[in-house]
Image (cartoon, rainbow, N blue to C red; front, side):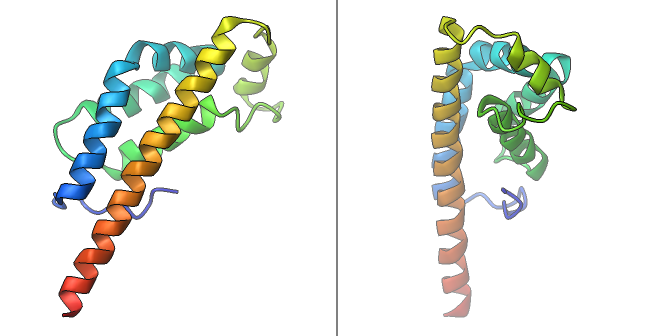
Length: 137
């Protein structure tokens, strides 16, 4: 999904600004993201979230592995694998009371992370296209 992220030496303004927005969201909601990831994915979910959040905390633009971890965290929050009984997410999801306030929190975190990732992705694509146009000129 985010495989086209440029190498770390790519330091353009647009992707940096969008990444700052992503970094801000992650910093503001760090504890909630970790809690939700553990609730939905047990220890593997928590490890995934920690890897994603630690990658975002790094001072440089995101690496491909950080973006993959963020995409995996988003999948976890968006309940992408809860229908697969062979995955831990299915068992974890079955333990959650649908009326619990944590459900709304998870939905808000998922929507916020998705918006921040989309913004970052769009900025990188736009910058890449701009750079390609400059190189062709």
